[in-house]
Image (cartoon, rainbow over all chains, first blue to last red; front, side, top):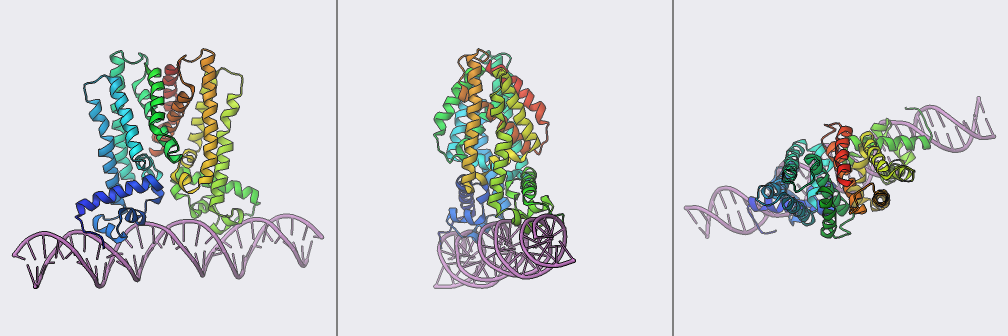
Length: 196
Length: 196
DNA sequence: ACTCCATGTGAATATGTATTCACATATTAT
DNA sequence: ATAATATGTGAATACATATTCACATGGAGT
């Protein structure tokens, strides 16, 4: 029998194990069995700490939302120039994905959006806020003359997020067959050349 | 008992039914039972025409690849101006997705990339060609002075594809809660403003 | 040292899924 | 018209997964 730990600790371990499984095997493979194995405990023990799979999904969504996506707003609230903020948000977003490949897999999986609508809705809210945050930074850049005058902030924000998302996608589906950071930097160099 | 049809016809029906299921319920729900139901036949009959699920997946990938993604090369080979070609490729890509929401779901699903590597590899090849095609059109645009001089063709192509992919993603995960065509046109207007 | 309770576990249960099989029926060739 | 063949189907099989249950055990408070 493994060491006993409090539910508070076990919950964190289980969520991390689940995130690892998604990163390595995808949401399809996010079974109780796989989570238990990855967390080094038996399946039944999972149920001591979570009422079921749905609660694990919700906890995972909560972790991803607060830990990862809440970050952009803090950067946006700083006092640096818009273009610097944008670059920082971009690079830290890429770094998070590189660290936790399960994040984009989970956030954009069919499963979440088709079978866990309540979780999908709360994630959609956070994504909406994220888009608005970036839109605001870009609008500030235009207002300050740092970025092209005719540029549409919302559409440019969506283009940037698409660039991030597609990079993450190519990286995860190719099984990390290229270095994501250098690739992201090349894309960024070209992007700032486009927007200013 | 339903009408009897040749295997050639049934194969097409089954593939279309499968594509419909992916569009409506996601790859996770792409079960033999769901396909059979959607195609209006019993489960056992699926096996008269396909050896199993893997063969259906392969046929679906083949359909998507040839029917949908083969299109861009034809447009690129035409005699119009690069920017016009780019717009045509972009809009027809969006139109295909609007018509078959299952396409992006299938092409970018965990399942394909983690449990059907051979299919993933053939799709990756097609995606690579697609990226190269668009890169070529953009490079031509730069050479002809239609697009910004300093712009990197490959990175700009990836940015455009990211924009398409993210639009498709937002559209499918929101359950088609907005009109994709007008949204795509707004994004395009902003994009051409960035690249020329 | 003893009791209580939170935590840990193997075995059962229920459900869903892929696949096979024996049999039924329609279409085609003779 | 009949035989041969291709197509269609309900039932059975084998396996995976989510969840529950009865029982085990280790640590906290007395």
